[in-house]
Length: 140
Image (cartoon, rainbow, N blue to C red; front, side, top):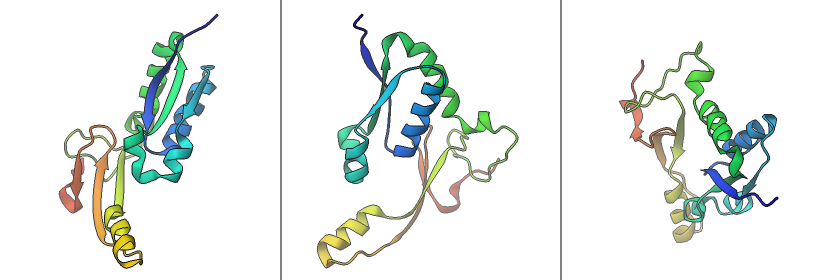
């Protein structure tokens, strides 16, 4: 029986994609990743490619969405832990911290043939996409 394969999610980070894949496979949902080699090799172009894509069978869509919703919410899974840094916009604790500017790093390689790092200290919320610098975070 030919069943339609659909994209259920996409990721810019290989680790998050692999965690999602393992969580789905643990529940008996067959799935596979596409684009992980491209993103690993050309990580600056990850958005242009669409990131690492996670595909499943269409019949498993509802169950997979529920599983992915649960693993993408660390504040629900770790309710007993208190996080110091939360998104000031949505209050989510799933945050990435970028210490140095990637663009400045690559531009310095192009211009000076020497990798220079410039401090950025920027936070990005993985839930709503809000970006902020330094001490603007809410502690709640």
